[in-house]
Image (cartoon, rainbow over all chains, first blue to last red; front, side, top):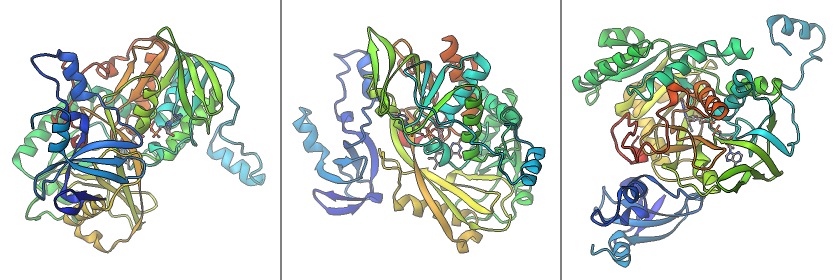
Length: 94
Length: 416
Ligand SMILES: Cc1cc2nc3c(=O)[nH]c(=O)nc-3n(C[C@H](O)[C@H](O)[C@H](O)COP(=O)(O)OP(=O)(O)OC[C@H]3O[C@@H](n4cnc5c(N)ncnc54)[C@H](O)[C@@H]3O)c2cc1C
């Protein structure tokens, strides 16, 4: 797979480390939410067959975190964004 | 029909006209006592033990493709009981004991071959860890021996002992481990279940569950709705997809593991060799092909095929361990969908929906578990109590702070 990095252009997937579902950005607030919310956040996944938004880390490159939108049935990548931008859109400060 | 040497002789003398299909091809009935979803190794063994050990014969196995089309027909056929943790090791040792008696039990040649497994050691911390693991294995009644470098050299003189990065210092050796003809396991269990009255229904995909007032009453399928008192799901890599139809989210990600087979070669590799440090393991089939593999591709996928970076990584591992394979040609390779759980261990449990049961999360290692998984799952479904050796495989274990994490990696499926 080739990941079209927003800053560096097309890069081989072997340069990246895969983290998992983008829902990992939405960590619950430890002061507000209970143990069940943390359990669900840490352990439960939709794991869909089809479009999946997921976190990739460019370890062998510029060390940026990316949000890749990829089809888990065909491996076709339809969108790549900086995780920082996605996190801010979702209301995180960074 | 009983299979025996006499039968082969008799059929040879009578033009081989007496052989019959090993199982029937029935249409689904409108209702069963128990429906097993998924005709892989675990589904078929579950049905077999439901009928044989628990007297449940009004049972159907529903398989979306043909039986054996999933991981049971795609794996690298290794069986072993060399785990460390309390929740795992007694279960896998039960499975090993069941393998040892499987062919007599099924009257089917599954080519169970206890040729032993070597887990290679390269440094002192690893030796300490394997000594501890070996002791845990022995405590469960399994066999384990810690070998020094010379003992490994006598067994496998062709390994690169002086490798600069991973010199071989010894190995953990389990003589009773080995390989089993994987397709034959599916066929043997299918034949055994069928002969006890189980309906094996192929080309029948489950597309939904009928759930009313918190109770599962049956399934929707591509061949119509089927009612059931109990529904037992075991669909390996498709676990999340199928259980989502019952509104459940699982602690599982689907990944792909690849397998490789070389052209047929003369016998050279005596048992199974694992080179964990180099992401490579290998055995040799009875036909002579080197059967090998390595790491998973490590991203979510349902494509049943892997990518080239892992092919390269696996072949590099092979070359580092035994440079002699450099001239062997790769004959074929393929991938299978594996259900990677959050701690690398499986689930055999009830769900919050009455009458709906779940078996999955076998990661890359569920083939060896096939007999015990089927037996323990049948025990749970038939009696509503977990079998003692599988009692730790609960879906709520993360919430209770009781994961079974052999590698200590945490909730990161692609690291297990
Ligand atoms: C390349 C590879 C190598 C492996 N090597 C080893 C090894 O050496 N040793 C070891 O112990 N383990 C190994 N494993 C793991 C092992 O193969 C699996 O853990 C095990 O086979 C899973 O259980 P199963 O046999 O029931 O799965 P499967 O055979 O995958 O059965 C699941 C079945 O469910 C069916 N299904 C899915 N969805 C539906 C639906 N909606 N309706 C009806 N049916 C459905 C599928 O078609 C499939 O037939 C390996 C796996 C792979 C991929």
